[in-house]
Image (cartoon, rainbow, N blue to C red):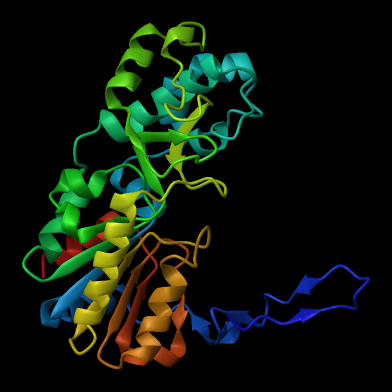
Length: 316
């Protein structure tokens, strides 16, 4: 990544992010002026002609599907937490997860409910099913930063999914003392049944079976994130799929990927387009659908509601 760092030794280093995004000059990024209807047609044709599809999915896809972390969905389900810890801290489900809960009983009271609402309770959302229907007849693979298990629920095979950031249904040693994660669905069910006053019974607080320390959600939030055997197997399958697609007409279907963790999907996808002349990019993202102008007709950036885009592309 070409980023210039300036400043003398005794000065604070400053990174000039205005010049480059993933090695591409920032001035090269544009919102395409092509009419929406034409963009939908172009995206449909690219998918129809593709030999293979790589789906890259971020939080925007789940939000468009209805798994909203804010608004009424948050205030209605987390009223007791908002009242106890303060609305200035409990603004939405994402931000609330960073609250420094004073006890393990309170931490797991929150996270068990969060996981239940976003990972366990929901069935496959219709939007995820539509994405599956769009690609199921072609060789495909999913790279996602989402941790809500929706791709599995929608019908995608485990062999074709690499969830890089973890899973709301799993827990791990807080300090990552050993490379293993644990299914926590049944534990979360018990926590939700017995939670009272934003606490769970102490007997349900999980402890690491190896070091005896605290457990944590299996989410990439620090250096202790556990990349277990399944994680590495999925990473290897993804790498193998990329190699298989090298000489094919491959479409990178990017859904709801913003700039929170762009180095996982967004920037690598752009690099792949530069490296493979037969590959194309479809970027669906409300408000962040800019694409490098130099990609020309090999990219379609649709700045609109993802659910509506998928519906209209599917109808063509």
